[in-house]
Length: 399
Image 1 (cartoon, rainbow, N blue to C red):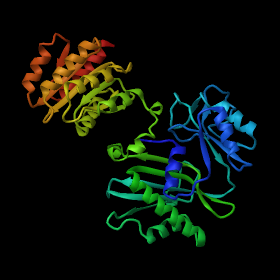
Image 2: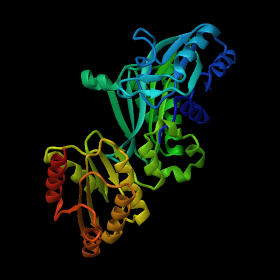
Image 3: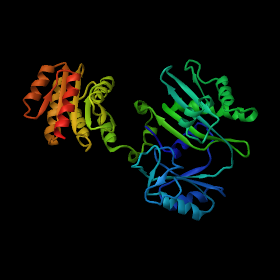
Image 4: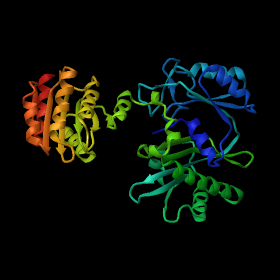
């Protein structure tokens, strides 16, 4: 689960992380009122969407010469003008794709004089199972570009969970950023508090870009991106309330209501499977046979008939889907339950695209019987290779 920048900064501030003063705004008047509560004379008006590259982005509704989603303002009227341009319009950035995202919220912050910018992030290192720090002196830039062009400028180290964050970790961060004296102490303090925030919120990512030195020698977090482990949200009811559903894909949002793992992709064959490994194998073999998957949808190990029906309807709601491959290995999940869900969903939505089903495992014969007696044009498959070849052939035949 991701949250907006203003929410991330408010959360980090609770852990003692230094952030500039700022206020969220849902309207132009709220943005102007926010600027009146800040000392000035410089304000920063930021579009709040779940995507990076806002400053370099462009608004669809404005001309090509219009400024992006992060603007400096020196008067209330400039704040008003920036807010008027942004709210309700669609911001297209390198991370949103051509569709862009509509801006419904703004963040008005106090402007600061910047002497130097850095990059600092905390991530989960899957290889070691530890929290890793990523630090670079090249803040304010696309970290992917830095990693590609000058990888030596990125420093990474992990923290042993048995010891937790120690003073030497703080010194390592300061050294990676090239800081000494009081600034080194500030960097160590910021790193320690970010580590506490990461653990305390079950975060999956905390990215600070930039972490800046101000002209008066203070370290400030000027931008923050925070994401949480969705599987841990049951422990953080307060954080769950920060979720902005308007920023999420409607199909993925609908899937989450049924505890389904769904990710929209760019292909044209819908996939319904049980188990992430089986999902990956299914998508790979579709590509091997010359077509591309339209989604990743995992119904899990113990889905009910209702859950399977919901999954099927979510796949069919995508107009890009030209065919569906169901690949189920029944262990805890029983093949007859899957079959009943497929039949119920196909009848409810008046299935009009080819459907290939491969079932194996618990109650497989009963499941196949349900499908064959359904009266629907369901193509059975004996194994995964057979299923992939058949769905590709059926889609090409129907084209």
